[in-house]
Amino acid sequence: MGTAEVMYSYGLCLLSILLIIFIVYLQNKIRKTNVRQWCMLILTCALISNISVMFQILNISAYNTWQLFEAFAYIGEAMLPICVFFAICYYIEPNFKFKTRYLSLFYIPIITILCMFTNKLHGLMFENYSVNYKDCKYGYMFYVYIINMYLTYFLGFYMLLKHFYKTKNKAWPQVLIGMIIFCIPYFINLLAITGVIETKTYITEVIQSIVAIALIYIVFKYQIVTELPVSLNTILNTISDSYIVINDKKKIVMYNKIFQNTFNLGKLDINGMDFEELIEYKEFDTIFDEDIDKILNLKNKKYKNSKVVFERNSITLGKTLKYEAEILDTKKNETLFLIFITETTEYFRNIQILKLNHDATIGRERLASLGQMIGGIAHNLKTPIFSIAGALEGLDDLVDEYDESIGDKNVLPSDHREIADEMLTWTDKIKDYLSYMTDVIKAIQVQTSNNTKSIDEKFKVKDLIKYINILMKYELTQNLIDLKMNIMVDENKVISGNLNTLVQVLNNLISNSIQAYKDEENKIIELSLYQKDDNFYIEVKDMAGGIPKEIQNKLFKEMITTKGKNGTGLGLFISYTNIKTEFNGNITFFSEEGVGTIFRVIIPEKR
Image (cartoon, rainbow, N blue to C red; front, side, top):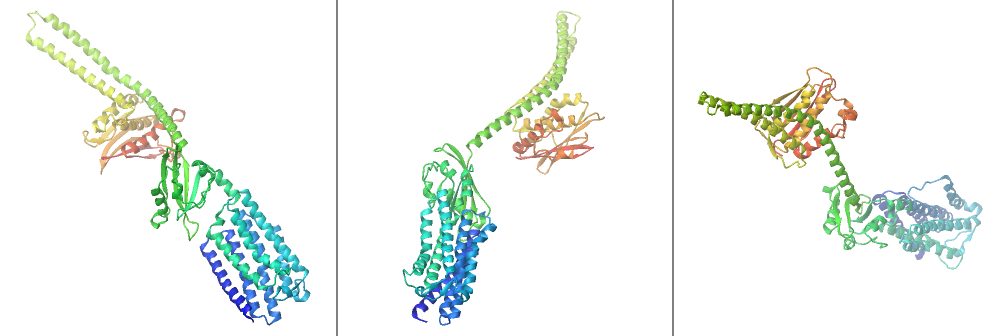
């Protein structure tokens, strides 16, 4: 074995070790995809050829042995074009389906391998084989194999260039250069076969291994395979939200057209650009350096599975933008961050419209409630008004009597004092009636006020009881229902919160209990107020048959009513919301079908 053979042998041994390292690297460090699997097969084919040729060199003196190793080398060489073809297919379309007709691509490679192992019987591959190209004499099957190999490569490279042209991918020049480099060993092989140059057959495997390692390293190192296929790329470019992907070095890896349009970037290609450099543009007045630092901090373990979310108004763009950033665990040797940008300008406008509609709906519900309440108030005011009218008539009579007694010698001072006492009695009664009317008017003010924080930020228990009695008296009387109050706290105890809101909530609960009763006898509603720990508990209890189970599951979650066309479901839903938001409290309930229901309002003593 000469010096040249020794050098080739050492070179092939080194390249075989590198191929094994790259196969292990792809297996352990690169996320599993079809492209990765076929790239590993490409390296495996090159490895089989290398090892076979290396043993061929070591056994060059034994003709039958080195011819056998050459046959093994052709396993890798014949299958390599097929592996490259399918790697390209899966790169272009990750959901590529392997169909039965593709098996035809394996016919000639398999026949070639079989012919190599049986060549000494028929000479279809080589009529005369030598390690020097110039001394080889080729059979007919060899030329079929060569033509098929070049056609397979041509078809695969044509599909790849067509894909890059259709997707307008700016990386096509680099891909074209890669294809040319990949073809170098096959070009040398073609020159040697045609006798243009003189060289050993080993040179093809050496150059082929070097090129395969270099190209696959570049593909995964510079993330060429992260380019999206045309179908997926089209989908991502038509979604309504912008997105951009950056790595832990703040370099832009990927983005969609919506991102370009959102920030008025036109046709500017920002792939590979530093993200901090990009946000210097005036259009990026909603994201700052500290935001990027927060996003990069997501890779710290303590922030695992968390997001960075912020929302700002852009003066330059005249838009409201919401940013949501999270980590993409796609590779073990690199951290990628996905940033979604949603334009929420229209969203906020719709929220404002919904709020206005919500306020209007609540207003209508309040007016409907007030309409029912006003009838009761009018009835309640009749009694004091008639009583005051009667008192005034009594005062008129006393005034006439006093006027006639002036100058009458028969009227004693004691008679004057008696008349005065009777007048005072009537005026005291009038004061009581006026006080009652004042309470009614104030109760109406409480219920009709739009400012939920201006009436009373703190109030006494006795005020709550008084307003409930005034406002619910008529409805209770009309429905022949007795309201029993169990007040187990000092009536001068102060509750923090808005009296208006709590009166509305309790009136709504009492009104619901009133309407739950049908034709039962001895209709009673119990209102209990007690204190436990640091909370006030106000319970409204009825024995009106309970709430159906299918409705119980929906209470407080949606606007649902048991009153059919006569109810909106707003009352209870709004009551729950008000207690939650204005008192930092809660409403719970217990209901037993066929028995009754208890609603419990829980209010913290200190908000």
